[in-house]
Image 1 (cartoon, helix red, strand yellow):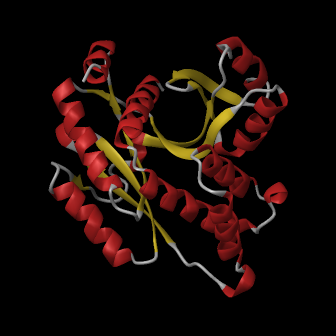
Image 2 (tube, rainbow, N blue to C red):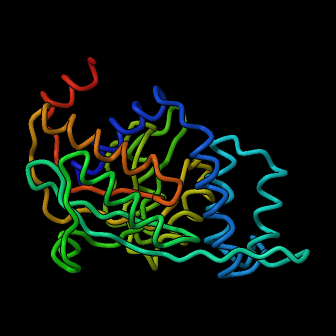
Image 3 (spheres, helix red, strand yellow):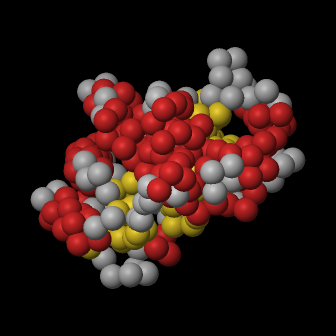
Length: 251
């Protein structure tokens, strides 16, 4: 899991620098709409919606926007949304494996934008199944809070079903089986621990170490893919040594 956490660290710093708030808002709103459509508008009875709303609030999405998204997703007031979920498999520079999650109302546009992002940045589409075996679906909870220790997180999370706990740019990253994520998140909350996000993600099983130049190329590719409003998430299986991590963070 170390590569996943290191990448999250670097990506977080890049995100702060890039400050892509408008695109981030749009994608968070889309997640809320889909969660409300799938499970209804009641946050108490729809944990996926609850987590989507909490993530949006942490990113300072206005409450009015959140409320409208819930109503659109649930079909309240006559508005309705219809999105298609697509996952693309791809290879980046030096054979880095990528899983690209798309949520779109126009699959032809989304496919064209993904292909363009790959073709212009040393990436190629892969055959279905040729990359996916490198990843597992996991619950990923990012725990924050000044003064929070790893022991605090372990005491709350392991008993509730957490599999691993790793350092993260914002504190700690708790890895769970997808079916256990909500219970682990609740246990963390009951222990008084704040969390930044709780998502089901593609976590790499097999990682490849890359040098700083390859890492820069991979980041450029990921940035290009995430420029598309239809691309929700990009996951990769590269790992960074402490030396490469330090070189990237110094830039």
